[in-house]
Image 1 (cartoon, rainbow, N blue to C red):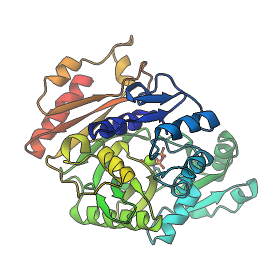
Image 2 (spheres, rainbow, N blue to C red):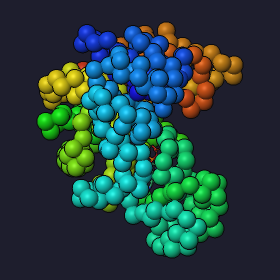
Image 3 (spheres, rainbow, N blue to C red):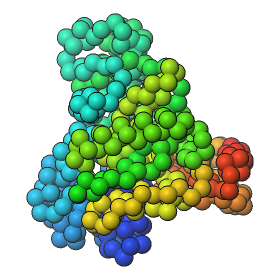
Image 4 (cartoon, helix red, strand yellow):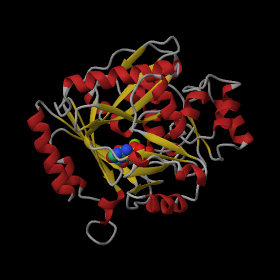
Length: 368
Ligand code: ADP
Ligand code: MG
């Protein structure tokens, strides 16, 4: 379900293991639809489309976290669906997600759930300055506004169309990190190494793994918390949990994604099992093995902005990028570039962290 780049990389991993794939996405040029054996080009709630997908599939997964829960319930009545509709429904709603973190004993940002104008008046002073986030449908920093005062909060709530929101205290971040786990039907779980993440403008820009950017003890705590969150959901599939590392050294959970995640793309080139193969394995009931990182890795996201850096629209100079040793270029086959649109990524691997860092800097310079 879903034809974006995450679906495309899942399809590639499934096909490498010999599977046939079917993708449901209304966009005829969707990145995953273009590379799948079958492409059902209907909306997510189209009964005929869902029937076609069922006919082609032995098991079904999602790459798009806003697939309507009723569509997953329809599919789940006939085929194994992983992750399950319940887990996806929790991950789709920031308020429910935070309640789940608290149930699992994992600290999250101080926050208030805002559903009506009267909730605004009851907001405690210590949540300001804060970030107002829509409970549903936010991604890449969209659907959120920073607010410093009660007046700004009232205006932001208007700007976000008065939909249910969560107001979070603005935390003093020292760094951000994430952990990806895969959990099977029988509860077995493996994890990728914890990733250090850098965001720009609310969008992931850089991920590092195995470079020492993240203290060992922090990584261990984040992995333990992610396992507790996945166990608490009786989760089946690949789950990514994002964390904030605060300036006082404490670790706070931010949000989760019920699917492979941008911050795990390095695993395709730097691990012996990628996050997408883990998704295939959990879906097909194949054994899970603990992934091994065989190289330090730095991943750079390639946003559509790079296509416009010279004024007129033109692709970046791939010849220069590909001339650098240890660069693995992934482009998602999107037909047009737009600022902020994820067009691809590149991962740098190498013998040492210094070598990887040097090449990543050169690649960044070539890309401007
Ligand atoms: P999205 O669903 O768009 O990824 P996030 O909740 O992860 O939304 O927020 C995007 C980014 O905004 C985070 O990665 C972080 O850099 C910043 N951010 C979000 N919440 C807070 C907070 N409470 N305090 C400080 N920074 C935050
Ligand atoms: Mg996020």
